[in-house]
Every structure is written in C-alpha cells, then in structure tokens.
Image (cartoon, rainbow, N blue to C red; front, side):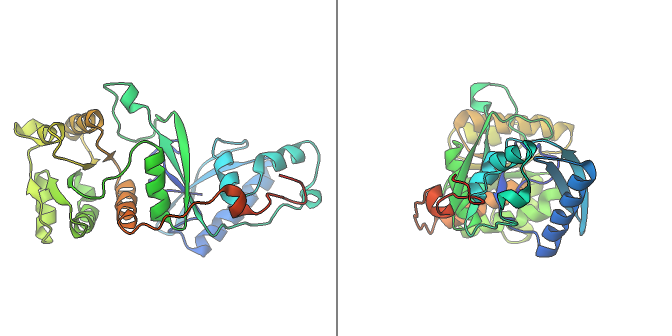
Length: 303
C-alpha cells in the first residue's frame, strides 16, 4: 500500500493506494523482502504493520508494529484476502501451509483510501496535514485507474473536486518548481489561476497565466476576500515559516468555511488534478466487491 502524501503526514491522514502507482518492481520486491526479514527476526505470529520511506533509491524503516492496524480492512477489501481471519487462525495455531493463503495478490483494479477530516465540525482548527493525526474516519473508492479512484474517494470523503472554475496557488519556495507544472495542468484544463506574488512569478516565468493576489499580511484586497466572496473553487497551499503559517491558516480557514477544497501537499494536489482530468472524460462503471474478488473463498475456506 503506497501513501499518496510524502513522509511527514501521519499515516492515518494520508491517502493510500493499492497497488502502488509510482514505485518500480525492484523497489516493491525490496519492500517485500525486508518486511519478511523483519517479521521473522521479531518472531511475529499474526499481523505486522511496517512503514517505509523511499528517497534517492534508498528504503528507510520508519516504524514496525507487531499488530494489526485500521488499514487491514482496506487492504482486505482491495485484495480479497481476509487478513484478519487468516491472522486469527494462525495465532490460534493453524499454519499457513494448512490455510493455503495466496502468496501474492495484485488486483487489476485500483483502490484508494481517503481520510475523513472533522474540520467543518470544529471551527478554528487548521486543515494543514502534518505528523499529528486529525482524521476521524476513512472512505474507500475503487476504479479502473488511480485518478478516477482518487476522485471518487474525494467525493466520498465530502470534498468533491471542481471540474472548472478558478484555482488559487500559494506554495513555499521549495515547492515552486513543482507548482509550475501543476499550474500548467490546471491552465490546460481551463482553470483561471490566482497566486500570491512568488508563486505567480514562477508561473508567469513559464508562460502560465496567473493573476497576482495579495497575501493576508499584505493588505486588502487579498486572497481571503476572494475565497469568502466565492471567487475561488480550488486551493493549493503549502506553507512554510512563521509568517506563512499565519497567512496559510487564514487561507485554509476561509476555504473550510466556504466549502472550497483545500489541499496542503503537492503530492495530494497533483493527484487531485489528475482526478479532475479523469472526471472530464468520465466512464461510469459500477462493481461490487464480490464481482471483483470472485466467490471470496480464501485458502479453501468460505468467506
């Protein structure tokens, strides 16, 4: 299961996808191998939750928990493997040889887990994602491809993405290069783009039309005025630094109060734009899990 957001966002708040959408087979094999070695070395009987970070062709172990997690039901539904049932049977003394679980099951469909946030129930809370878990639930969506599944998950989580309109971008310096690509994609989809000074200059340098708008600290009329007046349909805000946190908080609070989708990571924003692109060429398919996984029989035992 691959997280959409990068390390630094709590796993409970991150979107997740099965199967992996950007890791190569060599890296995935390394993940499987190291996970098996950890389980055997720790003497785990049952379930194991391992979190890896991947950077510059290196794998890093963030944490290892010899227990189940709330992602187990998601993985089970995505793959058709009844992990909790298998683990319980093993804990009670059955062997994997007796249970005949599938060695590996990579679904042909794509499943996305999205966190459900309580921000609209708690006025004054900051919707910025970070290492502190804020979600109170989760939803699951399935489609033939990742963008379509991600878009469905946003709808299920109560944050449907706009298919047209006006987007506002304000990102920290380290994100500006990637944000220009995001701006190009939004522009090609017909979105009107507003941005704060530095982000607007970065976009304009690559011939992406972007209208500069004041930060809150720069005085009115500023971006919060635009959001509150209903002129913004989509917000991407990746703050950095003390002033940016203050300004970003006002932006995110205004978006929350207005019901405007607000994304605080570039990885999440890129996935969202891909979902918008997919939604512009819809192909509606409806499936039930039983159809996707057959009879649900795992290892000869009725599901």
